[in-house]
Image 1 (cartoon, rainbow over the protein chains, first blue to last red):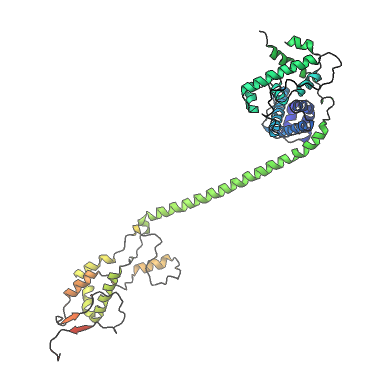
Image 2 (image 1 turned 60 degrees about the vertical axis):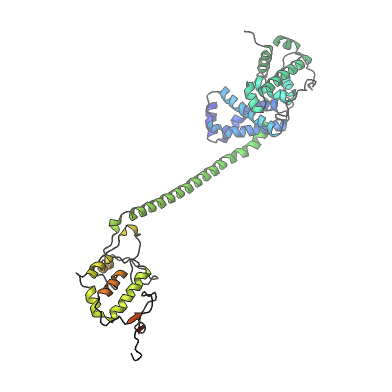
Length: 185
Length: 238
């Protein structure tokens, strides 16, 4: 099904492009919002990413749906990093004094594992911590790749990641995820 | 193998985020239809840009093709010219060519003709006799020049004005070549001196002196300008 959709998108079929957009827009918007907290900027990044994807879809070879989603996700991530660089958030945002910040989250109604809460905690990380944690822990980049993408050293990437983990665990404990935190540590 | 606590946290976060619903975050104002409305016009302009890019590439290819073909044609004409210059046999005409002479030989020839007009019988008989040494000496000068050093397009020396354009006519050229016209005899200055020495003297010239260098740079066209000669005598009545 998706293969036919991709072939029709390669032929410039607008309806196929709309169907592909509807299928992945919400998921990729979450990806964009994990890197850029400002919603209008995240929408602009998503739009530019889809624009690039439709223009470069002639060079894409479809194998399966996860491959298609990974390809689209990578375009969104690159576009988000480009947006951060264009707005001079990179690499200036790499700070070391983010330990005292507190996440501005509302108290959880229950103590259960909530994906939306974890998502919101990640969004509350400082930009440098958040970017490196997203790239390493969620997207699967290596420290070398992160260093190349953000124009920083590998040691800086490692230190940013360890600080992001420490801050995230602290927040998890403060927001009632004590059991989960104890289990993973 | 036990995983590190940090990697366990990463896996736990990744696993948790994979359970997110396929919808915008709660409280978000994200509207996919509105974003598509902004995206669709930009997608419509994308093929036009590609067509413009293709047109530029086609125009550049045509320009390069015209330039290369022009260069190739120029090289081809040059190679033909080289071949023509290096093939003297094909360009050797039947008509003997006259070569330009230096000014000294022209002056000597004019002096010779002025004397020949004074003594027409003697000079003509000597000059046109085939077995005479003077005739043998003048024969090589009338031979055609070697064309290997001359350009193929060099015009023949004729009486035509330089402003007139000459139409190429092979028949006329062949007829001209069969009956060559000789208006002048090309004689070396040394031959003229030798002729003067061998010529029989009609009158004793020991008592005359010639004023001047012997060679004239200006042309003598008429007989109204005789040579000035003064007799050497000590007698006042002569």
